[in-house]
Length: 265
Image (tube, rainbow, N blue to C red; front, side, top):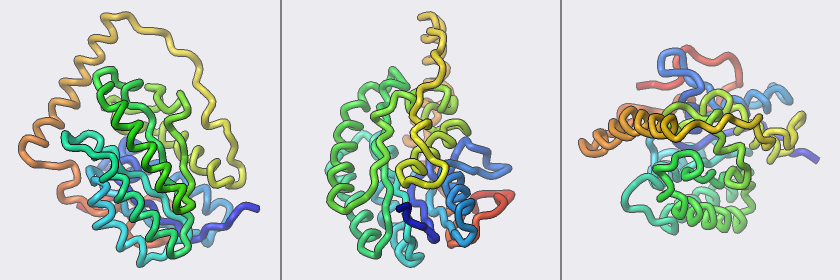
């Protein structure tokens, strides 16, 4: 029998905030909003809060978002964290997974059903990021172990090739596009066995035409200059994309039309 969820709280970083499924001017939607809409379609009593803020690390989510989430007493919580940690020079999978485990333990201890994720392999999406593959393996393994200890549901994005199909990702290759957010919402809905959900989200898209070597090289160069360069500059000056940002939906409210702006700066 499918469990009913009436109080959904999403914790995380830019992916859960919904970046690139919309924009800063018109507002972001994202997979968590899409999931909330599906929950509300089944039961209009659903209330939803999204505490995610771009750029946040696992430690920051534990310190800043978890206390708020506990006060909201969700019966469903999604936790997607760790990608910003993976990108940092001093990464330690065990340390990051401890933050996951603390969050899982606290939320499940209040009776919430927790959903978390195994990340897809960045090296399959970005050739220059193959050095992240081993880190991703290590973090995924430890998150799975922590989730199993606390009865959390794991959505395994690593296991499905569609999750590294470039057509699901924005030009920066760090954030999903609208199609990608839609697929991710469907994956979570299927993991929760929500009405109308099925395994179709994991089906591969039609084959892509293989680009020439010159075209691939040009794509990599544009990506490096357009996205990696600015990111390195921000890091060098101690700036973050999260500076001045707060949660777009900090309290539980009915799921309805999206506000004109999905964040407060």
